[in-house]
Length: 367
Length: 230
Image 1: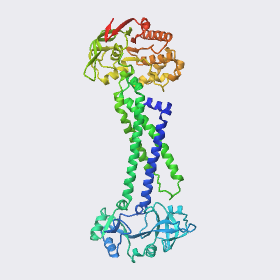
Image 2: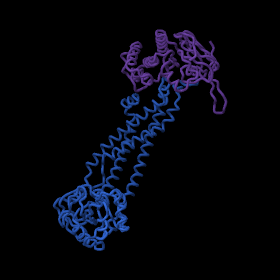
Image 3: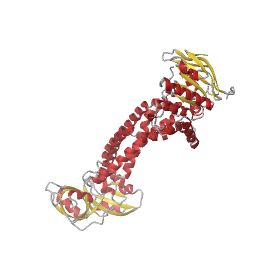
Image 4: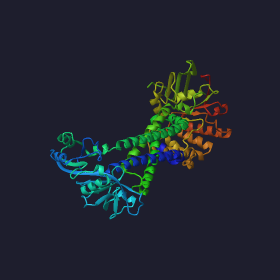
């Protein structure tokens, strides 16, 4: 092992090409992971932020706000379920917003929520005509105290402050009172307007571990209830995005594995004579293979560290809201673990060759 | 362990090595070879290419297993050793000096000696002391921190000899130690080998096809077509 580390220290040039290639692969891996996390975060923030135990849609809504209607009588049934402690209505409409100072076609995409129970990080509903905005809307030039106009009806909404990580379907969220939302919905989506007391969904807090089943039973199947995690996964497109990105990430890890495998296989071929000598003077195959693994892990670790630092810098220089990149320590750690696993696995390509190196090759067997 | 003659470094009795070829035919590389070396004896093993001298050397050094026969080195019968036991045997009982020297290119002269300890017993400080002492005795103390590429051919050969002596072996096997050197340097290296082996009471087999260096050894053994001829 010390021998392997000494070679790395004294002959870094031999490993430079592999390190550069692995760094590029690691950057790609972490960037893809960051994009996935960013996309998912910007699609699901509004649901993840709900400080609740269940989200209740109507039975045919398929976890879509647009398709869901909860009438007051259904709400009353939900409120009567044992273990339910608080119920709040919630609704959403996705619109384009005109921002003062921007061109008439330069619209900011917003998801306007009307809510009764405040999500995590969001204050209580502001007065009529006002809203809290997700900070990503700043990228569109929105500032605190500014009044934006949403939808074709140009409904004015004054921004009274900013919240974070509450986006929905990739759009900046606005958090307003139920009346503000209901009127904006009626003015801009007349076909989808809802009467007083009607919401698209309910946010439920309670102390029963199996609240969702109890709610759906109590409403006689008129509702389709989800835990928060379930509601996040059920948002249309989220699972598909995750699957697609995870497949790309999987292919990237496979490429890393092949690169490491080929590089160290070539190195092993090149070192056959040296390994033969080492075996002749008493090196075990496991010692030689262990050295290869150590070198692969160190090279990959260096590549991953450089890539991690570069991706963090990239995250800092990219303006919020421009591209959905979310770099988290968790994602970087997962990427590093995947790359290290690929490094160890890649080395196994060389295991058979190492085992087959005959110490007799050090002195030849023909004379 | 089988009892052996006291004072012998190597006993090979009726040793055969047969290779089976791809078409099922057999090639006898070593044919009923019997050879005994005293504890400080130097033997030149002389023969043309393909005569079996390296095969004999490899079997004596525990690198190859014999098809048949008995091999005892430094009192240890290695005839039936498996690969793991042979690895341990090579770590402890035998030293090698290879034809092309084969030092580890990225290690200094001192570290090339210490490789033996790192791959084997890992005794640490005593090994470092021994390495320093060997380098001193081989006239390489001032070259201890040099890489092989910074050493002359003769100096590299001396480092290789030092490496072969690191584990205090009962037997050192030299594979064509002068083949890559000019005549003058070859003679110097043979003098060095002779001095080092005799002063340390270590037996040596010097594989060569060069009759000019055999006089540095106590005796010569010729090998032709796998058969030893005294």
